[in-house]
Image 1 (cartoon, rainbow, N blue to C red):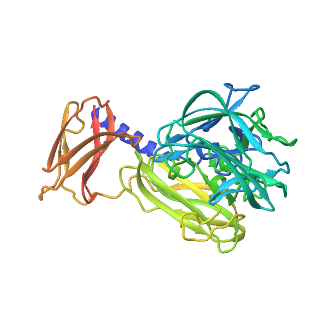
Image 2 (spheres, rainbow, N blue to C red):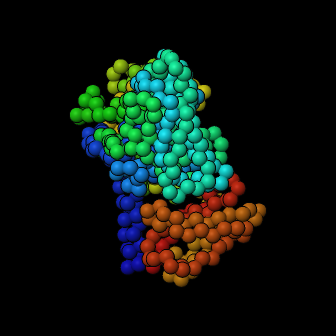
Image 3 (cartoon, rainbow, N blue to C red):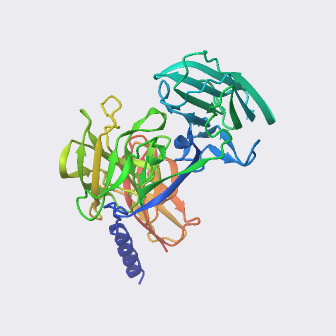
Length: 469
């Protein structure tokens, strides 16, 4: 009876491995409107930087206002090794400063506002107003804030404008931290009631009463960079499909902060790029799909993917996609075929060659992608360990088990045990003999896989199936 039960468990285990998933929404047929964050008009905000890890953003509508209903609250935040200041910008921030601006022809003699703040030690907050003429800066007015001011306080700064000529546009920068120096997470600035004095042409949205909610139609189960778009969305729904009704259209745009981007992933965007992905329970052989691509200059698109187990990368694949006017088939091959099995598959498509920082990529390149599929390796074909003389006794076991393997040179090994879903459930380190004793501890009855791995080379010295009854 025990042999029959064990055989049944083995069959169930293999069935679970064979039932490997396909990407959700592989043909980009379903889309939903997603709400990102609020921004005061006509500003852009640092919410476009922080949305991927802080959905509210770090610039928010505050009811703790000086005048009317709202004020703007800016907070410096951290994520991993990055520190991002709260920022409001009239104009488009990027490398070298803020470009563009909005039309303005008044000639104020000064600028006033009300602020309260808590700027941490060694940090500095700023408000900067630049007056422009024919695209060039005429003059700049600026004010900095340090320390703590718990109640609203009025400040004034001269505009420094000449009597003539009049400006034709303005740019504005308001931050909760230094632009170039130390930025301290937690530094906060709340600002309200900005006024141009000595002119009939007022400051735009002076009391931050008007806010807009940034939204976008997004492909279900995929993540785009539309949250960081300035004027043009990067990823949109297209009826120019390979099959079905829709495909995804990805355009390289100049995103907030001056980055040139056009990316889509089945995971999410973290500090170091695409992360996460779809859950799987087998090793993929390849990813297939169809694309067409219009390049700017010498640009190429990319398709890329990575496989992981328990957060550790197992394999990666990248393919450059050259221009083509008609839908063309592509494959992304993998080479990893071992245990532990892949538990996460991240897929990325880019409308430029963003994988190579020295390559050319330009705004305006457009990639269409459709009909994504994953082909998995046959079950039971994972690479065999290089050393065969190994055993587990007893197997099945209920209390303890002894693993024996060939280790004549006393190399340091690790024992790794995984459940049927590929989750890492037990680890023993610093094994220098040819035998290991383990106790059941809290492991439930079931079937497991084990690997005994030489620590420095990563070679598998023994592996197999382990049953707890």
